[in-house]
Image (cartoon, rainbow, N blue to C red; front, top):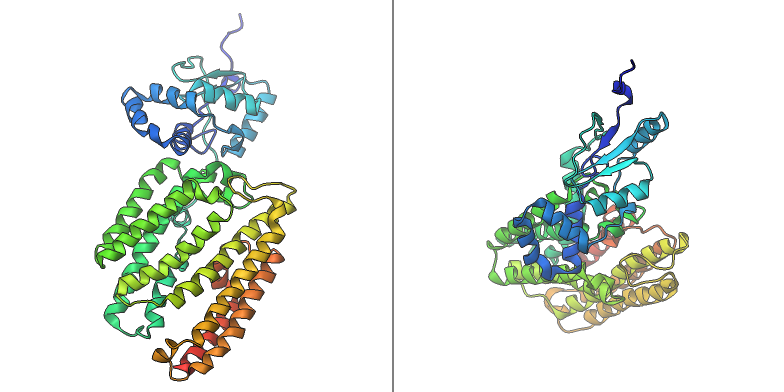
Length: 427
């Protein structure tokens, strides 16, 4: 008599959803989405968790619907499962995730013969599928999540020291470095939190989908402890500086949180906030070293950084046009805004040069410069740089943060050296 037990190579394949089929945890993703949409439910989430993981999963799944099409699936494993199913093997989704989530995934993939979700153990003799995608080096992935390359923006904290001609004052330079470290750690905390809140929109983006949390290279649970750790470290460094700096850092963090949760979706307000956050860094440098900064510098910075923020939005809208999309997910702009964004951005950039020209003719300039008339050379230099950045953006050659672009651009370095030479000649 033939045995009813299937041969080992034809046993059903059972697949766990979280951490195997998808490179993330659907409960954590659901919690993030829930707290983003309804942050006032945080106390309720704590109460649900005290009643056990099954109850928590059910309550989250009842209130939040994940876009399962965007989850970071293990493509190699999916290919293997498809091949085995074609051979005649049964493929079962046996998972501790909530049934609502599991069934949504099964319906999307159209691959599974059965679904055994939370509280429904799969007891039939089977083979368990394993995750097959190789993991990336943890150190490099963490640095990418912290966006260390974006720390370059915080060089703006050294501007007040340079503008006051005190860059060689060792004690003040140490304070400026501490301010730089504090702002960088705080900014990384914001980047981590922003990536956690933007998982869906990042996964729809051609390049942002490769970010560590969106791609599943880092679990979202890691971000939940990484963000407060970075914030606490930044605040600890800030305690070594004047209290006013710590207050400014707290304000910066609060505004960036508001930006991450809502303000970045509001047309024009988003770029004004970005320009303000750049300018806040200069103010932070002023508070860190105790050197006052003139209103001329703040006015110049606000117009210049508004122009650069608009460059960033122009690049995003340009991608919309190329992909024949009407609007960007999570943004307040549509493809038809391209020309108007260009007009606003170029105008703002050239207004910053006008502020520079007015400063050169002011009485304040004679306090710091023996030959202030030589500063007029800065105006054509700035006109050239602003115009060039906007022409490159129009051609689609500025596809990242403009300040980060400038740090990689050889011509920008030449322009910077010329500007430094003019300042030294005027001094």
